[in-house]
Image 1 (spheres, rainbow, N blue to C red):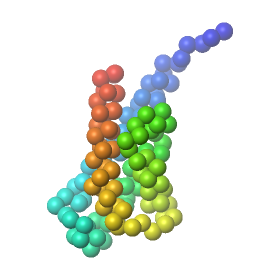
Image 2 (cartoon, helix red, strand yellow):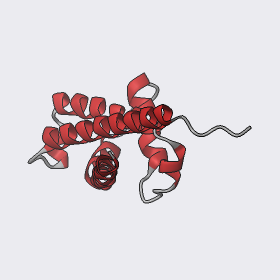
Image 3 (tube, one colour):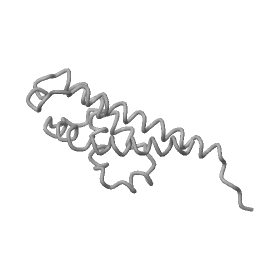
Length: 128
């Protein structure tokens, strides 16, 4: 006997995905505000901003790691491996992170990820 999918499970999955997307977007927006008007030299000499960026990128990476694999695999324009790996490093303090790498991720990878997350958020909203 075949059973039909449980609609409440699908709702919960969409609700969880929406929450993950919002968490990523909040952390990206925070990162952008932390470095607004800064260049790499200003960033690399401001310990408070470095700590703030490390925290927000840790949130992005750890949250990205919990996204559905189907979503991750279907958006290979995002450097998921680096983002997720960085999240692990920053959250669990496993390795020292190069400031130039942080800056590159802020300026190159986060804008692409932000655009994708905003698009997905709109798509999920229109399904509701």
